[in-house]
Image 1: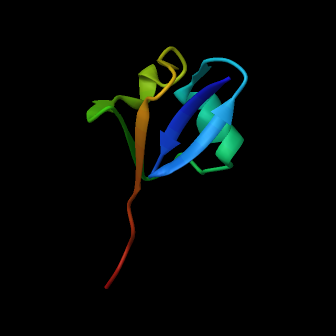
Image 2: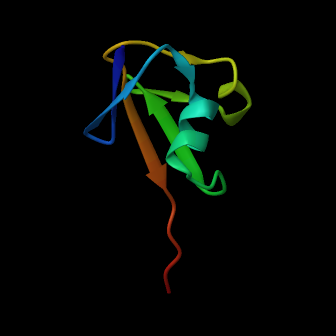
Length: 67
């Protein structure tokens, strides 16, 4: 088991997963979001190849519209 901290909530998985798999698991729409892993912003084109490891800290930021 590995533990990944996502927006200050621990999530547990049986093995390492990619950022893309995490987004699918959490059912988050990919439009208008940014992701940082351990304070490093990850480009969207690298989400499928970037594996998350035990104790990684993931920050998902969603843009909002206002007016």
